[in-house]
Image 1 (cartoon, rainbow, N blue to C red):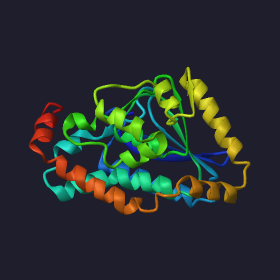
Image 2 (cartoon, rainbow, N blue to C red):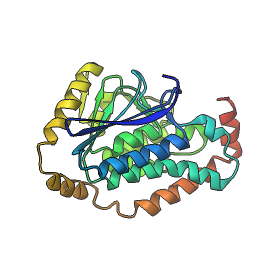
Image 3 (spheres, rainbow, N blue to C red):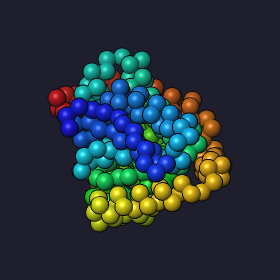
Length: 250
């Protein structure tokens, strides 16, 4: 696999949405746009009762923002548009009327932690350590922060945001509420995800829709909140500190 993609398959009324990028499943703007639209479409598809969000490859679930695109941001408007990509995916997941199960097979960084936190039920392997690295490059997890705080609490979110050098193990993430279960192997994870998703398909879709709206109560202002946060990141990515740091990734 060398080309980025977002694809959807349907099996036994479960919609599997998979994204991939050869750079450790990092997410450039075009992939973020396609991912948000695919989630929205799946939410409106009557053939799908439950959604599974996953990534391609065996190792990294998501490396977060594309450094290649970050390096090339030269004005605040472009920066806001880029970071709004993550906001749009999170809001698509929030507004989707169907449960979204996260399948996290490996390490997840930055925006990837935000995606995991925005699922409704997240399952992982023991290799799925998490890190919020944004402070390292002179910005912060502003866009994904509300989703992570909602799922893990302010204390856990602030801990990994400040300790931006450290990968926290999957069991830590489970104890903080990000993951519901942690499995020894990817094969065991896939079996559990399939079983859970297909079992949920037997439930009343209206009941699940109402439950989801309750789970996300209090987030009605996120369209504007996450846009404001994207503007903060879009401004900070232009700072001399961040520009000098990003040069080291070229």
